[in-house]
Image (cartoon, rainbow, N blue to C red):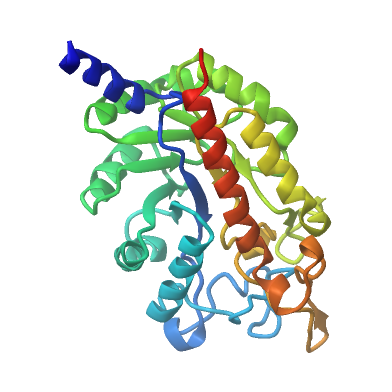
Length: 333
């Protein structure tokens, strides 16, 4: 009887959508930046015809300056910041075997391990991606020790085509999340759960519906929260989701927790081009003819304190989220 009860508890802990599952705070992480010193040229900072180091493809300017994702010292600093912010996991943007992002995974894994940060992979829609190629990619990446995957724009391909692959992966202990607000697609594809990523289109007002549908389908719900969106220095997307001195971030976190999220994903740690980053930004300063934005005013903070405001606030919300999940797990049914 005791053995049977233990088995039931273990299954409950592992079951998708279970209130007993350990909550995870995950941040989407971009390892695609390069500099002339480390990489022979600027990568992504120069997107859209910009000319680093003063003129970069971002409305904000990093507190550490433009950097290379291949810089070991930079990686160590980022992983320390991620750990300190209460983030359990990074979901690393990955663009296919042989890509710069792929080549940087081993160093990221090593740096993250030193700070006790888990590493998942954010499988991007690289050219020619198919369900079969994604399955092969996952086999390759699990060989590096990765067991959790977020599939961006999964349903550019037929939902049903994912089912047999996800069934086989689940038997190996591999977890897959589909990026979609439409839970029926993920259920048809036999994914473990859903996440939204896009904080511009899928705001916090939709989290309750998404998580309720996910739990009804026995899927995990990992809605994506973020500080804001502003990509006007990168591309033609003129839509802006203002940060409102931190209120946007607070609202999304609050609604994700209220929706009964199993995990929470953050868009993003360092997607500077779209202005969704929570990585420290420099105080306002004119660089040449350009005046970059800053986090000044967020939660009443200015200067150096404002630079880390979003990391500090992430730690605050991560703590509240874990307490909320713990209360759900002991609440009478």
